[in-house]
Length: 274
View 1 (spheres, rainbow, N blue to C red):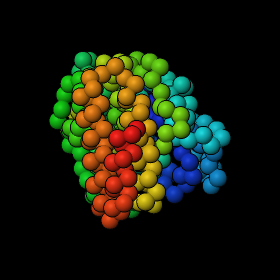
View 2 (view 1 turned 120 degrees about the vertical axis):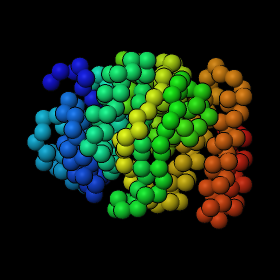
View 3 (view 1 turned 90 degrees about the vertical axis):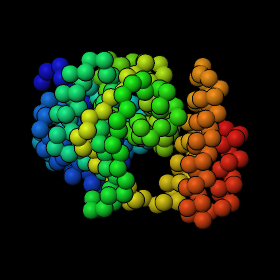
């Protein structure tokens, strides 16, 4: 298969047996067929491996490794990616039928754009209820927006970008929350990424099928790590202060929504000291 125009789909998978068949089927159903799907089985203890192996399409490639976390899994796939374009798809998410087609077309027709976003929908675990939507309209340099966690560029791991813009940027080992935000901040900072978006629906992702409290604590830890990494960049102190305040506000409101007032107070202290 020709790497020209190929999309590498990076899918980390850990104990993903509940949803991974649906995820793979959504890729097989794509209207665009020049792709490879690199599924990194991160030491699953369920039958994730067997499910992936049940699919015979040669474009689906299984990579097995001991459990080392989502960041290492994605990095493994990035190191082996052959496509001209790269996108990420977690093992419980869904690509609408034209997801790859419309984004590749956009990048081919807009050579000044390095990374493309689109209409995304967060849904309940059974795919029945829409929880939130993202309809981007921004076009321009990614860094000034993403460093502010601006909603115009959202911030999640489903962008498609040109592989020649990847360079040596990789996910931070050990991070399991906000690792995608950090990855794209670094990509934008070091490689001068220009952002664009299509109006088509390009991504459906499940939320709410994990422990809410576990997610909040993990999110807080990830944000603290994010602040520490951004503090090392040679950028305006105003950017760093804004990011710290924005994250503090997000976490305080999140804890308050769960009536965890002590944790809301603690998170402000943690963010100031990070």
